[in-house]
Image (tube, rainbow, N blue to C red):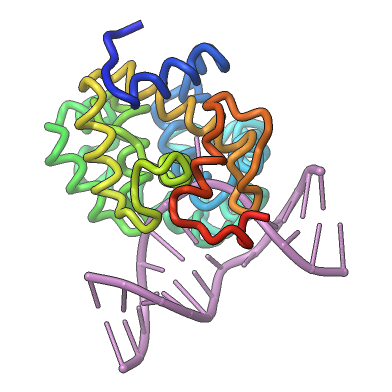
Length: 230
DNA sequence: GGCCAGGACACCA
DNA sequence: TGGTGTCATGGC
């Protein structure tokens, strides 16, 4: 266990003791991480698994296979992941970027300095901050924290941040309180997702089994009107 | 059968 | 800059 400080460290510790190591990202290759990061946009991971299985089942999760695959066929295969036509377009845009900028070489891409590559990724159509950071952390092993809906919701309900905190602010907050280590960022994000998926749903503000203990009581203290909770 | 699930983009004021 | 509509499947 790395040295931890502040309340963030305590949250990490509680979650780690409750869930154990998550072993993220659930993928067999860097390319699979990239595809999964796009597919999971606005969707729980369980929806993505079937789409990934479809691609694997057809033997189409290789770089050149995906590059050659017609967009419409790709859209059909990833249907279970929701917004499939848009996501097919996004995957194609990402592959086009890798092809054009790095001649299809992921190793070369991930040798690019973090801030430079992040900026490039954000320039690709369909790649926003969370998707870019997921790719950088989980495929590129770069020390950057991935913020998602769960992260904001959990820290808001703990009374630590504003409800409408921006992506960059939330990321700065975490990174300022947690040592810049790839393994730490990897595990913490995965643990927050585990908690979020289990009990911090949007319309279920109260949860009796939360391993963070009383975070939902804090939720009422964080400025939420009581009738919205009850 | 309705509702909800790890975003990102376009468009508008 | 911030709010809103759009995308559009599958499981509970």
